[in-house]
Image: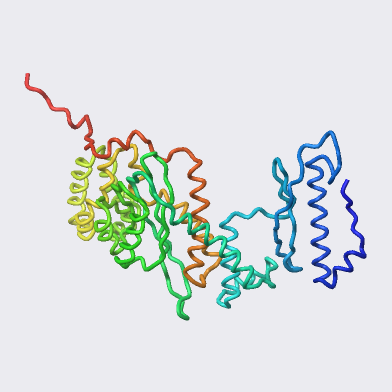
Length: 401
């Protein structure tokens, strides 16, 4: 079996090569890994054994940041199967990105006290700019490849939503919007197809972002679902030959702002009658009827309903099997919460690249999870997109006897 005792003289000789305690820590962890691998293989190095299950296959370099400094370790590789020591956390790319952004902010001297405490708690007080640069480069390459990948096939539905983040720019702290684009293709799969950083109210920003999606192959768009960002609707009509669905949830909040709090339940129930209709024709009729009923008491609400009828009910013209996921941006709310959770740890990002690095890594991992899940939408229903759907019970005509 492999020798598990190391000559103290050998460790003392290494003291001149670096910190003594760090050298001991590296040696001890290396011995632990070698012992673990021997247990998995069933034999020591160069040992013949009938119970051997596999063979060694070299090492892979891995660093471990501790309060003693950065430990340089060699993790044993196996020909069959895999080995990863329990004391080394197999970090996801999003976690690596978070560490990289925190380190970058800390080194740049722009971090908040909370971020500084996190860095110290990680034992990264001795982190160097070159180490951060190397980690950032690896993550940036993977994120860029994901965010700029070609899009093939047709994508009838696109969801757009914005999360606001703080960024340092020219000595000031500004608010920027991280625009996330999610789309569903005709195979019933949904994917995260894009990320843009910029001022959410600028039409030019929206137009450039949507055109970049088109340039990557986004085609067959029939409906875009989003909140009512200024300039977005114009950008959609400029880039796509598609309808726009205003997020029903956000619209309802804006509508109820014109009503006293005590009447919210009653008014909301009245408006929802339109959403419960079986087709677009009857939804429109119900919507206008409710607006007229509310007009005398809440004229501003009725005016809002008049102006936004087609935008809020656009999803009713699409297959009913898909409608529950088309009327709002709620299907990607969980994704937005995860993005916000990671971003809140950083607080203030040092630059735009740091935002793309962290948010892009989170999106990369979420997209992988979606791809292995069941289909998000019923495939057969896509054939009905161009067909007008009417409630059969309301379409029956009485023939003359």
